[in-house]
Image (cartoon, rainbow over all chains, first blue to last red; front, top):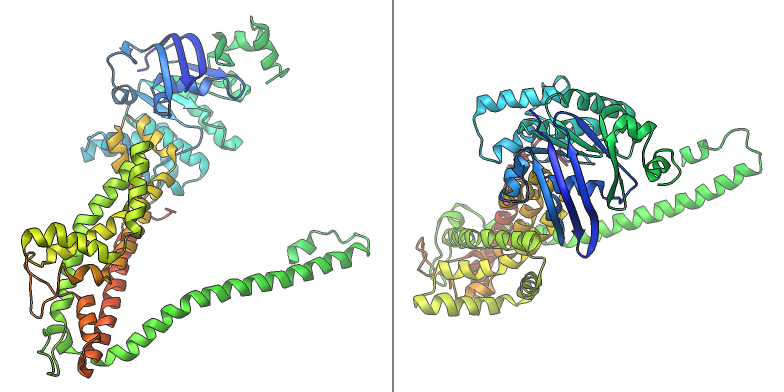
Length: 252
Length: 302
């Protein structure tokens, strides 16, 4: 089951330049939350702070408090511990090219020392089913490399890979930006089903997408979170002028 | 060309038509010239290789027989005998060199690519590039000083150490370059699954770069397999069989050298045969490694 996320006074830097300023946010468990905003506004940086991926960038630093369920991300938790409970899907599909489809999905478990063959078979099948890829690849999971799939399939493979470790939270960083409308549709459908079991935070440039999949939406601008509310409210009656300007296309 | 002209609609005015044709002629000639030049360069590159190999076969193949491949050398002046002990010695020395040099080179390459973005890394890069340019005879002297003098023996081990020192910089730098080619998104994908950094480096990054790293190792291997100078006062050479690491050992390049400068015709013939065998050994071991690596990769992989 998904858990909620609580963020308090989160600041992030790349070297000396500050990318996030005092972000405060409460993400509801088992819902999808969309983050929108113009390029470079800090939304990707923000979700990369949630699973401590931000600090893998050179000279990056973070200050503030992030709680994933009852786990304090930056206090007494190691990044690997934390990331095992948080799945992440990236902008560009990044299957491991030397691994079969099966090994890609099982990677999170195998590389963390989990090796029960029988159990792995079940998990791989279940994960590929939840990412709506099983039917298309079930005959070649061992034979084909993850990199041999089409772009949309690769992205669903990456989702399966993230789901296989049974995370409580799923972070998606513009998961559809490199996909055609049909693949995008499939992934959106997937997000809809997945949020019954997982807490989903999705960064997107596509406002229609935010409106379609998310119950809550946050608007970022220049490293600050301008507004955070129910998606309906953000898109029909935003309380901040800047949000309104952005969603009506007056800037950004 | 055809598609270019085809893209012009039929209804185009008649004045436009010849111009399109004219350009396409110019392009066609340029195309021929460029292709011809490319083919020519390939021929120029391959010609020496083919010539060397052809001449070796011509001179050497007649002297390769069962005795050559199974017997040890005869005393000076006597006809017959073979280089079997030298072949075995080369295999032994190269095995030692690879066992020492490959892990060291890969380890250093991993450090440089994944952790070495700093002063210390830069100095290792510099030293490694300099080491790559050090004459092989000098490396032989170093191995002589650190192994032979200490053991008070010429030995297979000393030869292996000398060749290993020569392999390390090549392997280090190619490993580093191959690892840097692995897209960062793959590292992030693994981190995102909660895989620790060391495990990501070994199981994802290194594995993705495997074929490039193998190429680097093969280059280094092929380069040192024919080295003679660093073996002169390390492995030293031996007229008899030797399997012990601490004893002087025959090696093909040494044997070829000794025979080639000798006054005996039979030895000259055997030197050619030895050269041919050496080349065949290098080519076949490189091919074998490539074959094994290729069989281990999946269909659809780049």
